[in-house]
Image (cartoon, rainbow, N blue to C red; front, top):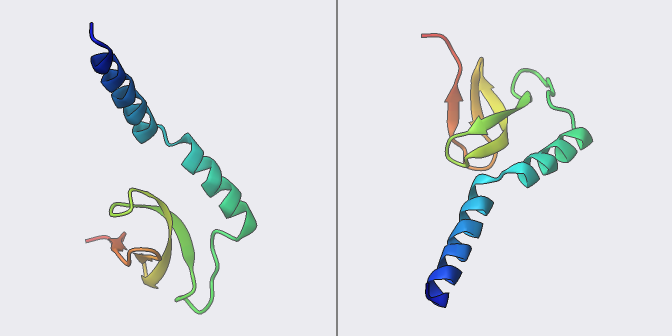
Length: 84
């Protein structure tokens, strides 16, 4: 086996491990959530919850725009939890 094949395999494996292990991100979110309240009610428009954003692909804070309609604070994508 040649050395460059071994090194490319090692770099690929470490990249895949870093890509699929999200343990560090979850620890940061837990520490961040401890500093602020998860839910703030301020005349309906001020309620914030932590939801999984499909665009950001992480747990992000969402602001409630309408009843059970949330908007990501970072990317402004809407998450509709209203029943049809």
